[in-house]
Image 1 (cartoon, helix red, strand yellow):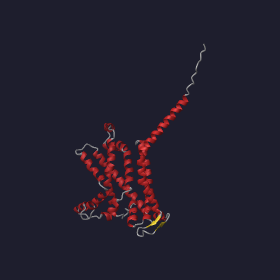
Image 2: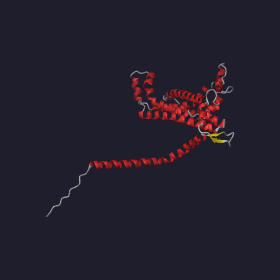
Image 3: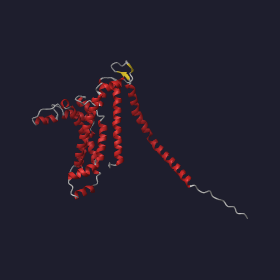
Image 4: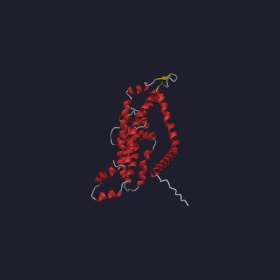
Amino acid sequence: MSLTTTTKKPVNLDEVEADTATEGRRVQRKQLWTNRSLLLPAVIFLILLTQIPFIVTIVFSTMEWNLLYPDDRGFSGLDNFRTALTSGELWPSIVATVLITALSVVLSVLLGLLFAVLLDRKLPGRALARTLMITPFLVMPAAAALIWKFSMFDTNIGMINWLLRGLGLDTVSWSTNYPLATVVIVLTWQFTPFMMLILLAGLQGQAKETLEAAQVDGAGPWRTFTWITLPHLRMYIEIGVLLGTVIILQVFDPIAILTKGTGGTKTLAYLLYERAFIGLDVGQAAAYGVVTVILTIIVATIALKTLFKVFMAGGSR
């Protein structure tokens, strides 16, 4: 009788691990494309909604087209951009935009922090007070500007001038004498609740044990706020500043209703409106629009990068 022995081929662990890794990558890629396919309709809709109008705007910016002479059109190349950059109106508008945005954001953050600290305390009617404080942010920008124009700033019936007359002081024509302050006041009134909500969320997320420990160690309210609460709110303040800046950069209604761009309040948004609907110059308006979009993209990119750093660092920077 002859015995036959069969030898098994030794298992190569490296090949098994390589096959497992390859299969894992294949499954991961499949899952990734599945997730992307769910977002694909929204991405396509977003591209159609935003990029096609922007491409059309770029095409219009290379044309010589004034609605006063609708049949007189032609290709002008970069002449509209040259006019936009050398006309002397673009840079003052950039300065006005930056100034209005900076003042409004800073004042909104400071007042929002004040109200957030007050509403974080246990007070009777706190829920009602929070609801009322949020109301200005829910008002449409045009409606808010009209309310302030007639109910507050008006020389004859405005409440501010009524109060000044009651104190024996002269009335003030706010939109004429202080146009920049007028716009900043309205924007601050409208965006303070936005900042308050963000900072209030930060205050309510603060560990109560830390505050109690500071109180036990003898730290007063001011030292507790400056050394514990304020560093904790740093991330929330940065988020509020970045989001508020991106939103206020595009503000148009208060300027159009209150000042008509006079007194150093002609922002980029109002300059674009002026060229398109008052000057009726489609080519120049499109050129100003392209320049405005480019500047906004630069600011938004810097803001978003900073915002992502805030989230990644978790407020520990």
